[in-house]
Image: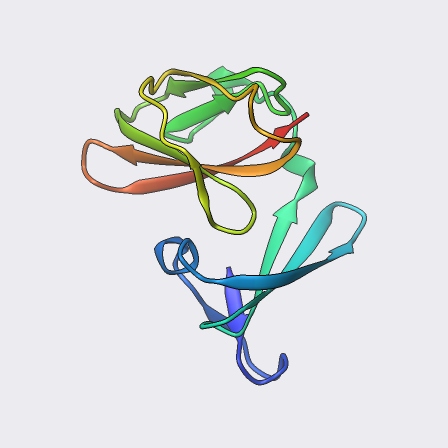
Length: 140
Protein backbone atom coordinates (compact mmCIF):
# COMPACT_ATOMS: atom_id res chain seq x y z
CA UNK A 1 0.00 0.00 0.00
CA UNK A 2 1.11 3.52 -0.67
CA UNK A 3 0.00 6.88 0.67
CA UNK A 4 0.30 10.56 -0.21
CA UNK A 5 -0.04 13.78 1.76
CA UNK A 6 0.40 16.10 -1.24
CA UNK A 7 -2.56 15.19 -3.48
CA UNK A 8 -0.71 12.46 -5.36
CA UNK A 9 2.50 14.33 -6.21
CA UNK A 10 4.55 11.74 -4.31
CA UNK A 11 3.61 8.32 -2.92
CA UNK A 12 5.30 6.40 -0.07
CA UNK A 13 4.98 2.77 1.06
CA UNK A 14 3.02 2.12 4.25
CA UNK A 15 3.33 -1.19 6.15
CA UNK A 16 0.10 -3.10 6.80
CA UNK A 17 0.50 -2.78 10.58
CA UNK A 18 0.45 1.02 10.32
CA UNK A 19 -2.55 1.03 8.01
CA UNK A 20 -4.52 -1.45 10.13
CA UNK A 21 -5.21 1.24 12.74
CA UNK A 22 -5.71 4.27 10.49
CA UNK A 23 -8.96 6.19 10.94
CA UNK A 24 -10.94 6.64 7.75
CA UNK A 25 -13.90 8.74 6.66
CA UNK A 26 -14.34 7.89 2.98
CA UNK A 27 -13.30 5.57 0.17
CA UNK A 28 -13.40 5.63 -3.61
CA UNK A 29 -12.71 2.94 -6.19
CA UNK A 30 -11.32 3.08 -9.73
CA UNK A 31 -11.93 -0.09 -11.72
CA UNK A 32 -9.53 -1.29 -14.40
CA UNK A 33 -9.60 -4.35 -16.67
CA UNK A 34 -7.76 -6.63 -14.21
CA UNK A 35 -7.47 -4.55 -11.02
CA UNK A 36 -9.20 -2.08 -8.73
CA UNK A 37 -7.54 0.93 -7.08
CA UNK A 38 -9.02 1.62 -3.65
CA UNK A 39 -8.41 5.19 -2.45
CA UNK A 40 -8.91 5.59 1.30
CA UNK A 41 -8.97 9.03 2.94
CA UNK A 42 -7.45 8.64 6.41
CA UNK A 43 -7.28 11.08 9.29
CA UNK A 44 -3.64 10.43 10.11
CA UNK A 45 -1.88 9.11 6.97
CA UNK A 46 -3.53 11.21 4.26
CA UNK A 47 -4.72 9.43 1.11
CA UNK A 48 -3.93 5.71 0.85
CA UNK A 49 -4.03 3.85 -2.47
CA UNK A 50 -4.36 0.07 -2.45
CA UNK A 51 -4.40 -1.85 -5.73
CA UNK A 52 -6.36 -5.11 -5.73
CA UNK A 53 -5.25 -7.52 -8.45
CA UNK A 54 -8.42 -9.19 -9.76
CA UNK A 55 -6.55 -11.75 -11.83
CA UNK A 56 -5.67 -13.64 -8.62
CA UNK A 57 -9.25 -14.36 -7.62
CA UNK A 58 -10.11 -18.05 -7.82
CA UNK A 59 -8.99 -21.30 -6.29
CA UNK A 60 -5.21 -21.71 -6.67
CA UNK A 61 -3.49 -24.87 -7.79
CA UNK A 62 -2.22 -25.98 -4.38
CA UNK A 63 0.67 -28.05 -5.66
CA UNK A 64 2.07 -25.22 -7.78
CA UNK A 65 1.89 -22.52 -5.14
CA UNK A 66 5.19 -21.29 -3.67
CA UNK A 67 3.46 -19.26 -0.94
CA UNK A 68 3.96 -20.50 2.63
CA UNK A 69 0.16 -20.43 3.10
CA UNK A 70 -2.78 -20.93 0.77
CA UNK A 71 -6.24 -19.58 1.60
CA UNK A 72 -9.11 -21.28 -0.24
CA UNK A 73 -11.76 -21.28 -1.59
CA UNK A 74 -11.61 -17.77 -2.96
CA UNK A 75 -14.24 -16.40 -3.39
CA UNK A 76 -15.81 -18.03 -0.32
CA UNK A 77 -19.32 -18.23 1.11
CA UNK A 78 -19.27 -19.87 4.55
CA UNK A 79 -15.78 -21.09 5.37
CA UNK A 80 -12.19 -20.53 4.34
CA UNK A 81 -9.35 -22.97 4.82
CA UNK A 82 -5.69 -22.21 5.43
CA UNK A 83 -3.27 -24.77 4.05
CA UNK A 84 0.28 -24.74 5.33
CA UNK A 85 2.54 -24.91 2.31
CA UNK A 86 5.93 -24.80 4.00
CA UNK A 87 4.96 -22.39 6.79
CA UNK A 88 3.45 -22.97 10.23
CA UNK A 89 0.37 -20.93 11.24
CA UNK A 90 0.52 -19.53 14.78
CA UNK A 91 -2.29 -16.95 14.60
CA UNK A 92 -4.88 -15.55 12.20
CA UNK A 93 -6.85 -12.30 12.12
CA UNK A 94 -9.33 -11.04 9.52
CA UNK A 95 -9.63 -7.35 8.59
CA UNK A 96 -12.18 -5.46 6.50
CA UNK A 97 -11.27 -2.98 3.77
CA UNK A 98 -11.13 -0.17 6.37
CA UNK A 99 -8.36 -1.97 8.24
CA UNK A 100 -10.62 -2.87 11.16
CA UNK A 101 -10.17 -6.30 12.69
CA UNK A 102 -13.48 -8.13 12.27
CA UNK A 103 -12.46 -11.62 13.43
CA UNK A 104 -9.82 -13.30 15.55
CA UNK A 105 -10.75 -16.94 14.95
CA UNK A 106 -9.79 -19.62 17.47
CA UNK A 107 -9.27 -22.17 14.70
CA UNK A 108 -6.35 -21.45 12.40
CA UNK A 109 -7.01 -24.07 9.70
CA UNK A 110 -10.76 -23.76 8.96
CA UNK A 111 -12.55 -20.48 9.64
CA UNK A 112 -16.30 -19.88 9.56
CA UNK A 113 -16.94 -16.55 7.78
CA UNK A 114 -20.70 -16.97 7.24
CA UNK A 115 -21.49 -14.04 9.58
CA UNK A 116 -19.36 -11.58 7.56
CA UNK A 117 -21.00 -9.28 5.01
CA UNK A 118 -20.14 -9.74 1.34
CA UNK A 119 -16.95 -7.92 0.34
CA UNK A 120 -13.16 -8.02 0.31
CA UNK A 121 -11.35 -9.10 3.46
CA UNK A 122 -7.69 -9.46 4.38
CA UNK A 123 -6.54 -12.58 6.23
CA UNK A 124 -3.42 -11.79 8.25
CA UNK A 125 -1.46 -14.94 9.06
CA UNK A 126 1.44 -15.05 11.53
CA UNK A 127 4.00 -17.83 11.13
CA UNK A 128 6.23 -19.51 13.72
CA UNK A 129 9.09 -17.07 12.96
CA UNK A 130 6.87 -14.06 13.77
CA UNK A 131 6.46 -12.95 10.14
CA UNK A 132 3.09 -11.84 8.80
CA UNK A 133 1.46 -12.79 5.49
CA UNK A 134 -1.68 -11.10 4.21
CA UNK A 135 -4.05 -12.91 1.87
CA UNK A 136 -7.01 -11.24 0.21
CA UNK A 137 -10.35 -13.11 0.26
CA UNK A 138 -13.62 -12.25 -1.45
CA UNK A 139 -16.67 -13.12 0.66
CA UNK A 140 -19.77 -13.79 -1.48
